[in-house]
Length: 310
Image (cartoon, rainbow, N blue to C red; front, side):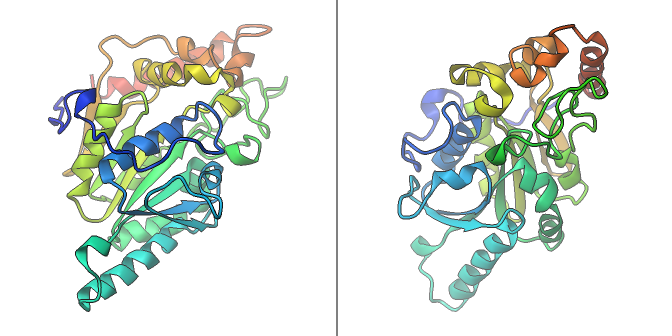
């Protein structure tokens, strides 16, 4: 299994400049916030963000913004059309000789898993098909977190949400399983797709560095541990993110040149229950009675995934 060499070898290699200021109205310990902070350190401040309605709506509230770059707020289904409208306008001005190079922008969609896997999926698919040019950063907290943590297309099997609680008739809580957005994008053969984690800053930064040189739709699926919705102490965000990778539940990989490459392969996977038992959304699997059948099914799903590559 090939691992592409990275541009950064250690933490000290990461860009020291910050493109987002500390302090925001987001929840303490938000994994998605750390992910976008690292992404913008790589991309720089000359970025226009088209933000879909969701948790990150609270990041930039008029007249205040923590971003050095520009920010455009859209409905949950429309960040990609908005981003492409901006990109088209910039290209027209550039081709007409009316846009200086230093005034050009990189355009990035920022959206949650609800927008990315559900409401905004159709226009995004059209944009990939048309070979439009933009970054796409999905902060994946596996539910509609901004409105109370309701079930989304990214909610994993066995998790409890406000609209899919664990009950006597539905002991697993969420029963449908998580949409594989990586594979949905991959089916349309875009130039680049990657999964990233705030617990792996070098891996994340190297992936953005590789994608910068490409043209077209480039997706980054960022695991975003959510203390509020997942139910854990904010100080454990990086531990939860680490366990997601170490158990194999959240594989770190990229799709480039028509191939899938895993960039971080656990040498010995940790049992999934080590990840599940630390989160309130999975508490019903352990209390008041341990539900081994459901836990085993989750473990088997992870094992089945990795068996394809090991």
